Image 1: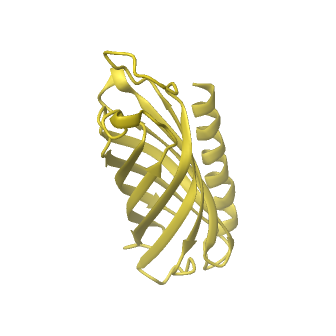
Image 2: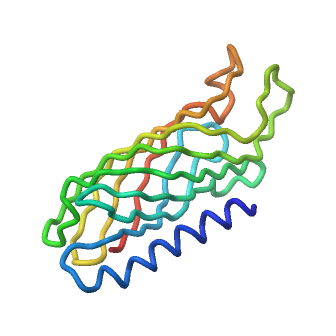
Length: 180
């Protein structure tokens, strides 16, 4: 729980601290978003969360987000991610569509309840890389929508049960409300 609170606090601080800097230029220094999505993992497939990106050079940005399952309290899975992304529209406010690619590292903390004990069970916490691609649509200068597909690759080995038990490899589809 403390890790989740710390990640949320850092994300919000980064988004709001950069907001004042973005006021004085036509290019924006940061973007923040709140998302809802769907995971392809077994328990708790709906997910909600928040995150943001801070631009460090042209379209190159660093960012992070936190998402947790919604609607299934017995199998709560929370994922925090730190990412490096490239926004191809170079954060120009005049462009209405902004494609991006991202790669990062994720930490999964879960309360995965299974009926039996599996051999070589690594526990509930896992880490691994993530890869994502998406489009941000900006109908107004500061408010937009974001569509993203993210692929998680968590290091876990259950042998023959690899794709049956949650927490291995899965994909997340997101739609978000975003501001810059």
